[in-house]
Length: 522
Image 1 (cartoon, one colour):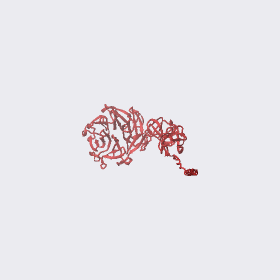
Image 2 (cartoon, one colour; image 1 turned 45 degrees about the vertical axis):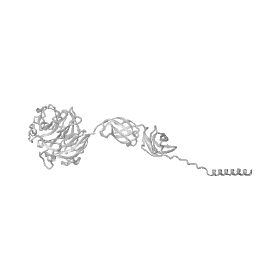
Image 3 (spheres, one colour; image 1 turned 180 degrees about the horizontal axis):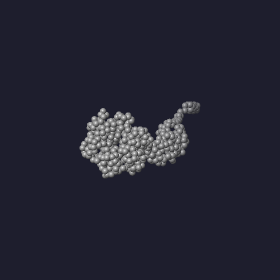
Image 4 (cartoon, helix red, strand yellow; image 1 turned 90 degrees about the horizontal axis):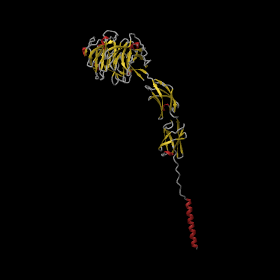
């Protein structure tokens, strides 16, 4: 019995000791992991309207979009995609301006302020028409107060924003805008406004020449001319100028690079055929260019029509230097005082020659089509009509001819050679009007514009005149004062403008004493 009692007490002692040891060495509890707090480093757009898509960059975002609670000024936004460092969200309706916040697993990060814009609208323009640089105030809602964020266009042409509030934009009308709707785009959203009627402005500038009487090659105003007369243009926009005093043919690229392509500056004058500067001229006055790029030059002092091919070879096409007006082919023909030249749609050339109008076929056959050979202004058919030292000549698309009859008239020669007075009268002046009610003072160069109107250099009036197909004469450019002032057409000045030609864009080039002027509408 004693032995059992001993074992019982011993077992009890062991159990107590084991339990005591267990309590003194409990199993450790693993630590609780706290979720990392999110941060916001930037937002890609700082202002916008309802529906604007904003990208939030930061750290510790949830990759499950629904676990990222994004608010704009306390208004919950929709998260469309999520990575641990980037959230794409949509600005909620009626958010108001305030901080952007992101909450993930109960931890919240504060970000930059987002400026909430009202819905984008354009309600009015303070002016509905005007030319280049017209200041316009656009009224509406939802504009950015940062002008660079407001993209304004007039008929699709970007305009410059000079000042911006949330409800008004001050802008200037861009060049060559044309007529069309005004549109405002902010953060990918677009509002359409009223139609703005664009009024084109005519601008005169100096394209080449510095005014010095010389023959320097160079670019733009680094070059010089001495009384350039006739001017023509090829298919790619190169200009060709008859530089009369130094007996040269000059070329001007569209970039205004001037070079001498024919004529010898070391020789006073001559009639030598040859290539480029090996050839010589004597007072060239007019140039025409055919569809193949061949130049035909009125070599007035030599009484010849010269031909210059695209490789620079100069030859005599018609005339023999005799001071008569004899019909014939090539060198069998003669000219008394040739001056102007044009090429009609048929390929025939037409020359003003003293008091005659001559025609030259593509094969060099010269015939007289109008004029009695004596000074006069009689209308009539062909050889019964008279002219008074006609200066220049041009052809319309039907090959009706128009002649500047030197002192004060513009004559028309129909395809049947019926001569009539198109505009001007015996009186010299600068009066606008229709037909014979208008006046000129030594009209020189003629050229049809892309608008179908006839443009005239009115030499001693120092103006460029325009004549509609109905014979309505207006002043296109020039104040009438002598000068070289550039600027708008109604403030620019000229000094005895001579010849003119249009390029394919509608720009007009004018030989004006010792410079080449350029006139554009924008």
